Length: 300
Image (tube, rainbow, N blue to C red; front, side):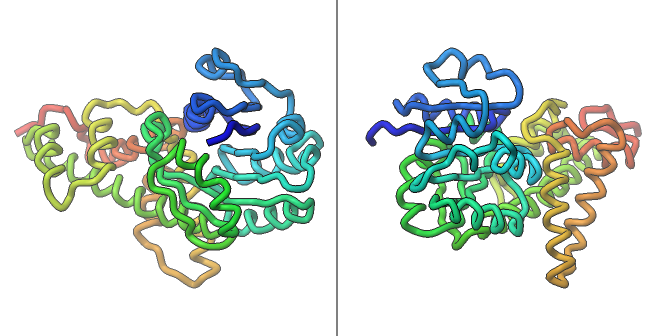
């Protein structure tokens, strides 16, 4: 692949390793982040820019990896945002997880400037970001997708164009429903096993070989057992995604009772100071209800 001028805005837990893969592949990467540039990126030849507009002026393809819809709005359309530095023919790729409705509005505004837009949220967490094994769900025109696909391949393994603008975000909301409900199921299963006196690590090992096996059980189940609740993917962000699901369900006249239940468990964690916990920390809400923690010696 020929070297390209790429922009990357948002160098958090996910964004920093994703940008790192683009840099390692030999691309000239122009970066901007609202906090300090992480050490591993600062140690490369990445070009640190003072604003989103500066990134857009320098790069032909601009990736965003930001926490929420308002963040994307500000980075794109703020006074020194990306839109202020765009010229015709460039591509904006939003890999954040945000509102599908707002995504369509943002795309229309960027396309009015003569540029292309893709929404391309990801799944796989910090592990997937570090290992370049993310699942990438893309919405947008097929020729634009094919143009950017080689860059996606540097960050992920399962790369799917789901449909038009906004469909990538819709797919990500569906993903977050499934993940949240699976976290709740793994939490209940491991908590049950531990309270009944079985070794939770051995139960997890056994379950991984059967139909209950999943990446959630593998990665997040291990975090529950080891009490390793540093993020990862923060509970506050997963709750934001479930809010998108429940708001959309209301407008679509859908009943999502299990999603609402998982959201309440996340709310209980946040009420206990856990907004910044990894989403595997959902188990703590169930432990509090049961007055028992995984790893605790069960009483007779």
